[in-house]
Image (cartoon, one colour):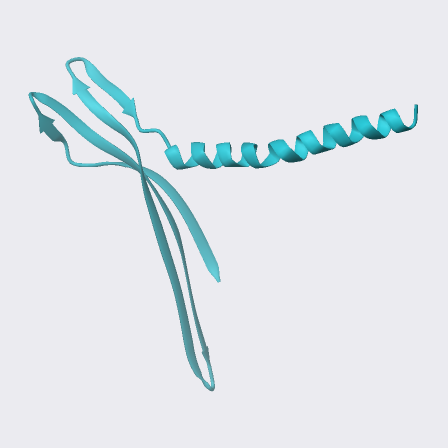
Length: 106
């Protein structure tokens, strides 16, 4: 099967609020594939299409240019924190264990 992964940045419709103009920006990741097979016994078809949209920024249009207000990825920060917290006991165990073994042989 031939699979294709695309990653694009798209901008939405401008939004006006209290005299200011904002344009939402998002990253669209698409994973798609398809396959068709024909034989003497019949035919088979398979298709896959997954799309993930994540907001990246809010663009404020100001005279003379644009101001970008990034939107953080809170889930990624949480998973990094979980991974670090899960490994702290393992690292402490390895340090204490190596110190205890070093004292035994002295």
